[in-house]
Image 1 (cartoon, helix red, strand yellow):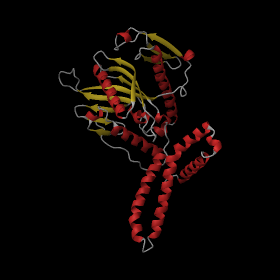
Image 2 (cartoon, one colour):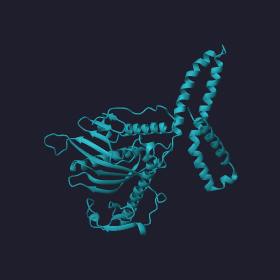
Image 3 (tube, one colour):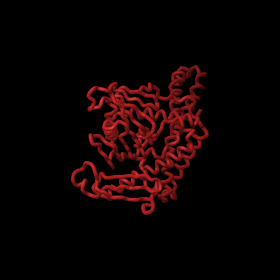
Image 4 (cartoon, helix red, strand yellow):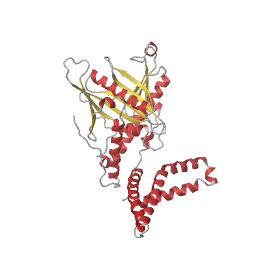
Length: 376
């Protein structure tokens, strides 16, 4: 059953806001006008859907009443199934619209990829993951900016940190963080390394962290008191100019012990700005994890958003198979996935989270979850 009292209250508030935004005293107060406009835009989809639902309910009632009229009975019988199907579909839409939204969903993302177990092959796998996300970002029109890169001796990356940015989506469902939030965790690869002479399959890992980009208003850092800043010559690739310039910046956040280093730019100022972005995002994630811990029992069954110790996905190259272990979903199109075709995986993870939120909120008795095999 839909929470009709809550939906009616939202619809009344929407009409009230519509009236208020036409008043001269509100229009003349820019700050208040923007605040009320934002509130109206946030509840507008729910109010409109509830209005459509109420109209459908009236149309169904009228058609049911017409069944007793010999002249209208045939027409009513023909229209009723379609109206009832539309009503059921709208009920599902309303349940989803009532789900709580994460303010971070529309944020840009700090993407961190690190080689795990497996030596040189792990570093190569980390580079493959970076290319996968870069292609996915490119396909969505996002911008990917490398903030720090540490290459391994035999190729691949020991560590890669990047900012993935895109315009906020109008529907609230396709922001950068909302799309990538479930990529955090341990990713495992099974394949024959190029250096393997006997054709044996090796297993290696890489860790992925997805952090919503924090703004200065989200996390305050007292640079004089909280930071220890070190400057050094940049290391790794980048040409003679990079390697001989004292442009690498390392930040030590003394209250937490977090260390961030950025050396991708030739400018100390730019590297420091990038390092601060990463640091703020890590600090924001710590605060988010604390908040999540307060409702851990409610979220225990949900898809993890940042458990780095959790094995989230396996990429099996010999079988062209990718398996997401959290939702037990297996796709036999690894070649397409590693080329950035992540849409099906991301949609399934989002659907799983929506189903769990529906259950937690009492909006659904039996929400359907994605199913499949959990092959290793």
